[in-house]
Each structure stands twice: as C-alpha cells, then as structure tokens.
Image (cartoon, rainbow, N blue to C red; front, top):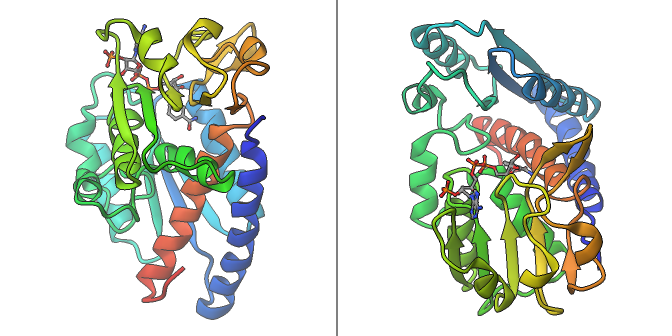
Length: 283
Ligand code: NAP
C-alpha cells in the first residue's frame, strides 16, 4: 500500500483554508509566515517561494527576507529580533542550510519561541523533551501524521529511525516514545543496520542517499517512511529503492508526494496556530 502524503496534505490544507478565513474575518488581518533566507542556496530559494505561493493561496500572507551570502551574524540576529517583535508577524523561520560562517546555534534562539514554526528555537526542543508536542519540528510531525491518518498502530511497535539529527531523528524518536513505541536510532557508525531494519515494524529512513534502503533490509510486514529528498538526473527521489520495495513491504511513502508534502503544510498550519494563540484563541 502506498501512503499518499499528498492526500494527507490536502486534508490539512482544507482546514487551514477555513481557519485562515475565520482568522482574517475576526481580526481584520491575515495570519502570516515570514521566512529569512540567507545566501544563494538554489533549492532553498525554490522551496521558500513555493511555500509562500501555497500559503497565499490559502488566504494567509508572508514574506521571504532575502539576505546576502556574506551577511554578518549580527545582521541576521537583528532581522530576527525585529521580525519577532512585530505584531503582524505570526510565524517565523530561517531557511536551512545557512552559509558556513553563520552559526545556527547563535542565531536561532532569536526567533521568538511563540512565533517559531519549525522548532528552531532550542526552547521549543526543550518543551518537546518534556512531552509538550505543540511546537515539535514539522518533518517528525509529518511522519507521525501520515502513520496516524492511515491508522498504523504505533504503541508497542518497534521503530528504526536511520538519522540522528536534531531536525529529524532525535525529535522523531521522542514523538514515537510519547506514543509507546520502542525506538532504535541508527547512524553512520551503526553496525549491521539491515539486521535492525528487518526486524523493525516501522522503518524511517532519512540519510540523504538514493536507494539506501533496499529489498534485503525489509520484511513483508515493514512500514517504510522515506524522508529523503535527493536529486538524481533532475528527478527528485527518496532514500528507499521504491520500485523494488513497493511490491514487497506492507506500506511505503513515495518521494515526491510523501513526507515532504505534509511537512510544508504543517509549517503553514503552525504559523496559523501561532496567530490564533497570539490573539488569545485556540486553532
Ligand atoms: P544530514 O544532516 O546529512 O543527516 C543524515 C543522517 O543520516 C545522519 O544522522 C547520518 O549519520 C545518517 N547517515 C548518513 N549516511 C549513513 C549511512 N551510510 N548509514 C547510516 N546512517 C547514515 O541530513 P538531514 O538534514 O537530517 O536530512 C536527511 C535527508 O532527509 C536528506 O535527504 C534531506 O533532504 C531529507 N529531509 C527531508 C525533509 C522532509 O520534510 N521531507 C526534511 C528534512 C530533511 P551521522 O549522524 O553519523 O552522520
């Protein structure tokens, strides 16, 4: 079975459209998402512009604040502080990756935690560690959302996540733990990954390598969630060898049309949720 991320995204989109209209009718302004983009990373530019177009189509507003590749850390911090203090800015994020000379650990804490839409302020990661999921990062939430929409049971399941970053693997492990799964996190120094993946009920792969997860690493019962986004000969592919896995495993997400579609929609939804909270209401 193919787990259709686009269908899940559509469902979230329908609610956003409705609630964005309610918001502007009630408060006389549109809920907004502002993105800070430093440097010339082409993929980030394409992604940020597409996100902006989508949110405008849904009745929200936003802006991409482009900064030069050689911007100083102080300049990025100043912009983030300024945007954080504006009443008309409800959602705020910094597009990754940043130029090498910009230290994300210095600049991300300057995003107001209440405006943060992708758990970039470490305060929100701390809340997640304590079990508060409202501001968890979008990609891990997208993984869980897809599983829940398709009724895949998580409690007592064994989960293997191949990724240990603060953006994907670590927060995702917490979300699974909160749902009573047993989690193993694998990374580049893990020995014998196929042995672990084969005996896991749910496999989440996010290594950034095309065809990493192959037929001999899964079982017929496996549920495979492919987070990877890779460009091969101008085509976007995931980390799983989709064509050989699709007929072997129990469930699998495609790329494109899987986790990525849901991630974008959850970022936009988070900006809208923040807007409601800032007006003292619940989304
Ligand atoms: P990253 O920072 O490069 O991290 C990759 C992770 O995979 C690391 O934990 C790394 O282990 C592990 N890894 C790399 N090679 C491995 C190997 N041979 N065996 C086992 N583990 C290995 O990448 P990222 O930013 O987390 O993103 C990962 C992928 O997900 C990329 O394709 C990215 O484009 C995609 N992504 C998608 C979304 C979405 O919404 N769909 C969001 C974010 C990222 P070490 O820690 O040991 O280096």
